[in-house]
Image (cartoon, rainbow, N blue to C red; front, side, top):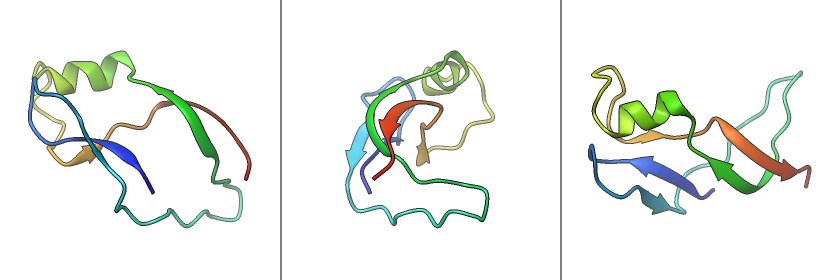
Length: 68
């Protein structure tokens, strides 16, 4: 799976393609993401304004895609 990963505050996101595919639960679905935005909460964490987000975190809130 490919994902944008927060590895350092105020630095470009690291795009990695070596992450494991998620395992969906009985009421979940895995989508093929075609576009993804960074929400305001993730942006504040990325910029270091929010001390809570840990580095090496995948940003994953505003997706648009299709079912494979």
